[in-house]
Amino acid sequence: MHKKLFLSTIVVVMVTLVLSILAIGLVFNRQFDNYLTQTTEATLEQLPDRLGTLYQTYGEWDQKALAALTRSLPMGTELTLSDPQGKVIYQASTAMDKMMNGQQNMMGRSSERIWKTQTYTISGEQGLLGTAVVRYPANGHTLSPQDVGFITDILRSLLLAGGVALILGILLSYWISRRLVTPLQHLTKAAQNIGAGRLDERVPVLSRDEVGKLAQAFNVMADNLTKQEQLRRQFTADVAHELRTPLASIRSYIEAFQDGVLSANEENYAALNQEIDRLVALVSSLKDLNLAEIGALQIEIHPFDLGNLLDGMLHNLQPLLAAKQLTLLWHKPEEPVNVQGDERLLTQLFYNLVHNAYKYTEPGGQIVLELAPDKQAVVVRVTDSGNGISEHDLPLIFERFYRADKSRARQTGGAGIGLALVRQITELHQGTVSVTSTIGQGSVFTVELPRYQDSFQRE
Ligand code: ADP
Image (cartoon, rainbow, N blue to C red):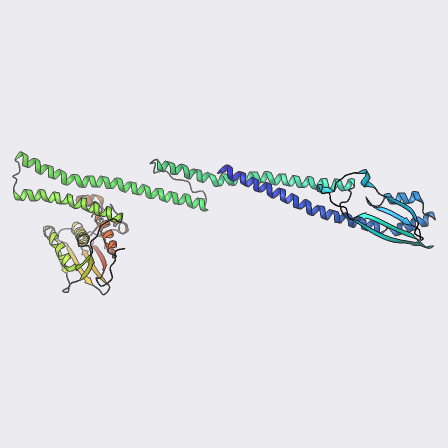
C-alpha cells in the first residue's frame, strides 16, 4: 500500500512534469519563431534606406559593400537586387542554412519551411535606383549562436525546475504515503491483537480526517468489546454464585435427610422445593433473556384481562410481602382491561417489577400497584417507598447484569437480569418502560402497553 501510493504519486508527478515541459516547449517554440520573424521584418524595414544610402555613398551598386550589407541581414535571408529595367544586379543570401546544415529548429521540431517575400523600391535623388526582393523564412528559423545560447539557457532552467519539482514530488509523496499508511498499519496490528484476545489494545488517533475517525471508531469498538467482556465475566461469576447458593442449600438438605438430622416431612420437602424453584426461575429467566436478545423468543399471543393477570401474580408474591411487613395498595379498575400478548412473559415482567420493589424496600414500606387503562394504551405503575436509584445508575439499570448496589444486590439475590428481561418483554409487546426515582424515597416503574383494540402485530 505504502509502495503503491508512493509509486503512483511519482508517476503522476513525472507525467505532469513531462507534459508541462512539452507544453512550455511547444508554446515557447512558436513564440520564439514569431519573435524571430518579427525581428527579421523589423531589420528588413530599414533595407531600402540602407540600400539607398549605400548607392549614395558609392555612386553605384558596389558589390563588396552589397556583400557586407547582406551579411548584416538576418540569417537565411535572400536578397535579389534589380535595376529599374529589371536586370538582376546582385543576388546573395546569408546562407547560414548551408553552414549549419541540417540544423533543426529548437525543441527538435523539423517542419516544412515557409518563406515570405518582400519587394522594396529603392529610390534616391537620382530617382528610381532599383528594386530589392527579399525572401526570408517565416518559421523554423536558423538559429544564430546567441539564439542557441538563449534557448539552451531556457532549457537548462526548465530542466532544473523540473528536477527540483521531481525531487520535491518524491519527498512529498513519500511523506504523504507514510502519513496515510502508518495509521492503517497501526489499525491492522491492533485488530490482529484484539483478534488474538488482547482487548486492551488501542490505536493513537493522529488526525481528524477519515483515517482518524476510523481509529476513533476502532477504539470505541475496542472499549465496547472490553465492556462486554467484563460483563460476561461478571455474569459468569454471578451466575455461578446464584447457582451455587441454592445448590449448596439443596445438598445440605439431602445430606441432612441422609444423616437423619432432618426428618423427611412435608415442611422440609417444601423448603427443598423452594430452593429448586429458585434455581428453575433463574435458569429460565436467563434462557428467556438470551432468546429475547437474539430475537428467538417464542411468544403466544392472545387477548386477556390484565387485571386478572396482575391478581394472579400478586397472589404468588403476597406471602413474601407479608413476611417483610410491606403494605400493598392495588388499584384495580372495575372493568376488565383487555390487552393482547403472552401471559407467561407478561406475568414474568410484572413479577420482576413488584419483586424488585419488594427486594429494595425496607420492612414496613409500601408498594403501590396501579392499572390505568387509557384509550390508546394501558399503563401499569409500580411505586415503592424503597431506597431509590441514583441518577448515575438510572440509565443503566435496564442493561443486562447491571446491579446498582452490588453488595446489596447480592444479598437480595439479584443477578441484574430482571430489568433487562422487563425491557425485552415490553419491547416484544410493542410497549415502553420507564423509571423515575429519588434516592431514599423510592422508585416508580411505568409500563405502557397497547390496548387490545389496537391491531397488535409482532414485528
Ligand atoms: P437484580 O436481579 O439485581 O434486582 P434487576 O435487573 O432487576 O437486577 O435490577 C437492576 C438493578 O436496579 C438492581 O440491582 C437494583 O440496584 C436496581 N433496582 C431495580 N429495581 C429497583 C427498585 N425498585 N428500587 C431500587 N433499586 C432498584
